Image 1: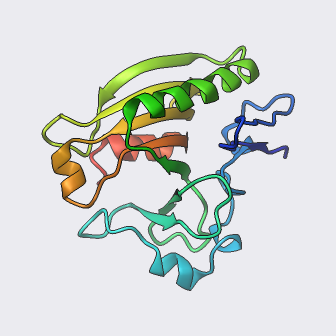
Image 2: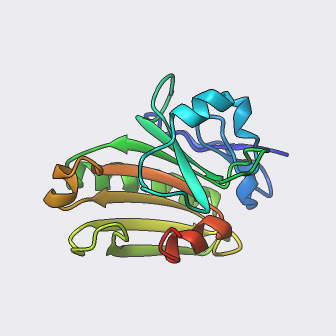
Amino acid sequence: MNKFLLALLFPFIFYSFSNAEDIRDFEIEGISIGNNFTKTLSKSQIKNNVLPYFENTRKYYIVGMNNNLENYDQVEVYLKTNDNNYSVRAVIGGIFISDLDQCMKKKSEIVSDIDQIFTTVKKRSGKKKHEADPSGNSMHYIDQYDLNFPNHIRVECTQFSKEMINSGMAQNSLNVVVMTEEINDWVYSGYK
């Protein structure tokens, strides 16, 4: 299977192959949908890097990486609870950028490059409230490419409210997201 590297390098280099419209054809830091995550981190490293987003066990959990990354400040990988194959269900690469104008400028450059690759893929652009902020004051500014929606790739600037940032659980960022229908449905079910 051909791989498409989503890399945030100056000047935002993207590699594509013909028929690169399957969500499994994309990588962030060498990680793609369906890969066995134990080829990237050991089982003990996975266990030690589970992000504390949830107080109780959920259908899925999220593992964070911030060491030895080439293009991102952090990568988050979504795994299914009790999946002994550690199959990657979604992957997000993020760069921490506080200033919204700076984030939007970088996002625009990335989207311009992706537009040249996905000439036949439906793209949606807009903004929406962040699901994790009950106040409704945190926003996503999104360009999303639907690959058999709800499978999608999106580039987003996320700006959190001061309350979310002060809680220590949120940070403004530019994200490249490779999301499967499975995880999309879980997010919209309230992460249950």
